[in-house]
Image (cartoon, rainbow, N blue to C red; front, side, top):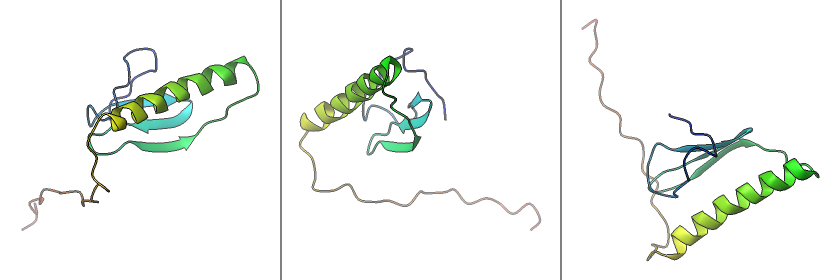
Amino acid sequence: MPRRKADVLPFRPFAEDAGVQTFADFSIENGTRRIALHGSLDITRDRAGLKRARELKGLFEAIAAALEGEDLPEAVPDEPEVSEPVRNPFA
């Protein structure tokens, strides 16, 4: 999955299924149906921690704004991944 640095392109929630926003060991995977959060992130009590907290706040505000601007269903159904059958090379 392609990775983008936080300062390269703006994160547009639910706009694509390929974008990933990364902060240290914490990833936010964009999707058209859901946004997945993975990893861990330390918010330290210093200027770097404040910067990181503000960046995360901006991301979550963008996610909330995208959701608030839509007519949302009660829940998104969990759909299993569809995989293509693989031809057996030994058959």
